[in-house]
Length: 83
Image (tube, rainbow, N blue to C red; front, top):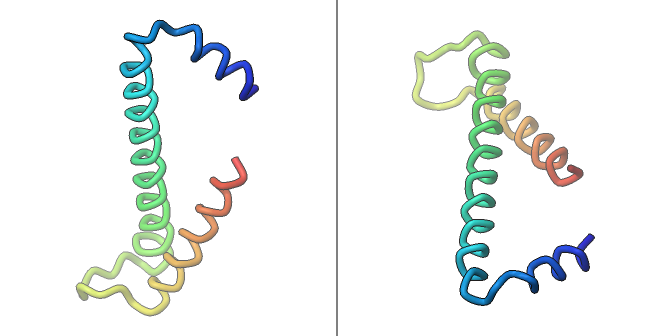
């Protein structure tokens, strides 16, 4: 697959390669931001809103919430590394 990709890249005219690379970098940034946003939203909903009753009486996370968020984010990162 890598060889095919590089062969395809080498067929792009020189004056368009820079634009192509910028497009790929932009797409990677968007994908990273989407993944980060999904992580934050998922773990917040699971650990803060639902898991512990959504108690917003403190600016700090409760110990249970903090542990849950750590476990949730670690699990999410392991899952996305496999994909």
